[in-house]
Image (spheres, one colour):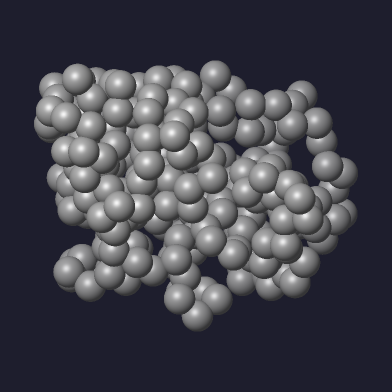
Length: 174
Length: 72
């Protein structure tokens, strides 16, 4: 796996390519690539790979430790992983058309972005990645409740990565 | 609504080409069936069928047919 660190420190954000499946199903292959990238990140931070559990909504977390926190995301050929001392959500998405019926749902978070979202595919995907990363950070799945969005002050970071992908991480501000 | 119409609606929602979906397809094998598609599905069920689809119900869908069956 080829790995690139796009943000050093807290959070650590790394991206890797998903290797050929070698007989594994798509889901299993993505899962394995995510774990491999998480291990790479934990090695980089000189931390062990703690035992992983999932909450009732499917959000993975390290068991029996108060942090670090992590989030993993896949899209097409790439996987992204973010590790932080705070609860974190990460999303990577290839730039493409966003389904039209999501407009109203994504509008819930529009006010959190500094720039107004245009109708371009890239801007719509940026909005989507913020939504998805926020859903992962909250840890209750989708759709996000407006109440959960409004309950926190959010720190949002967005990068254009791997040519035509958008990567976003969100954390709750102190 | 007949199966053809449901499939067309599903294809439109998931940003797929006409004829891309077949009822017996396994969802895990469809590249486009990702979290964005799942949220679009939740919105579709609410807007078009007045149904509140939960994450647990989505997890239980295995094939396209399972979604079609829910579109009543």
